[in-house]
Image (cartoon, rainbow, N blue to C red; front, side, top):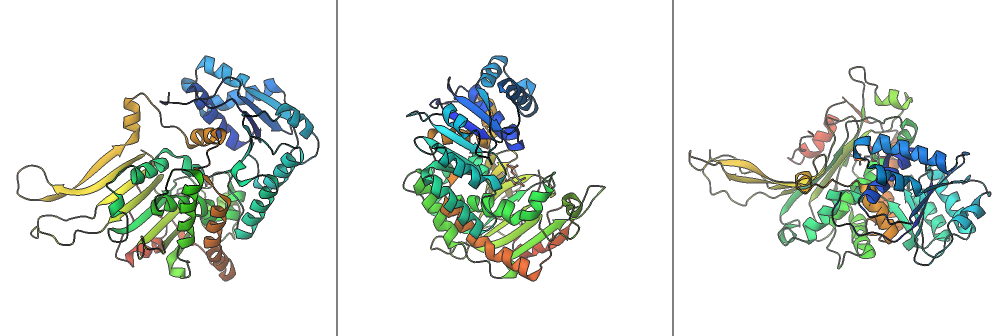
Length: 488
Ligand code: BG6
């Protein structure tokens, strides 16, 4: 159970692509957990659509299998499972053809006060046609909301086109663009940390902060998504969205209120203040080789000539009054030493040491916001080494691991999709990207990617299980700094 759940209003959720991977792995388990927590009300309906000749019973069987696989039999409650399966209905619909839309319109009539959510868990090429069909079928009015998830274009032009087409069908307040990083518990905690504590805000600027590192390291490879990944690369797959969103939350000014457009206005200002990445020395790309019988990137994507990066590291600045001159170093990659996502904010050194040489080192204070694993916040400090032996300084760590606090209260860490799906039903867009944010992020990375393509740039090879190519180390060494270790 997750504490303090406020049930949402009964809703109709139409899932395009209900039998796909995202729905099975993420959406169905998230909805189950919300029902288990008492948040999904009686009368909520989940209508799965697809081209296949299924019926309600067959769909419920598929959903049941997804629960076994991705929630796990140990975590399933028989009564909740039964009620959950009963909420599912199947509607046969080929999203690309004209047929079947009247049936859908009849199945989910516009009922005032009853949210009608269309979740497009489909290939991105289907976003525009499905949006147009929803509109043509007269389903875009009233309480309609539409949910899409990256890739939201592959460059500025395609993102603009997608936004333009969506705008022909829906108002911006009806469009929920998921970046699942924004639903992660620690990412939301970042806002609490910054704006519900008086301690950090006075220090949160170029006068006191030396630099910021954002790392999203994965130990897995491209995992059967070779065709998608090889057309995207780490820059488009992770940096354009998840990592820039994290950067925005670190760097943004306090919004007046935690209201969707106030938060998103502030994030947009950060994106617009990012220094252009003109200098090729500020960006390093890498591609993993083969190791211990594990396939190399090129083998995994089955493209021996691929110049696509599975790793990217870069240095940027937020050119505004608060952050002038503070480097933000970002890196992300696959097949690295461990799965670690964290933001590390390093404060400046003390201006003068009163301690004699030989007392031990005074390290920078570092505030570490850990997204995964072991979600939590740590603060690295210097203290006196306890006990006799005179004034000897030693590093110490203030550790706020959330899992322990939750476990102590018999609670579980919710998955990002649980929060995000319920926010869609509630009509709260705070944790969703607005169209202009997506465009600003593309506008910033496009010139870099274009340069790689023009110059036929090749990524630096790196060994799996490492921290990426040596050139990425140089990015910080040149500035007299070091990346934090990537370790589980
Ligand atoms: C996805 C990327 O958006 O995020 C994947 O497409 C990546 O390549 C994944 O593996 C990482 O998400 P998480 O939540 O596991 O950190």
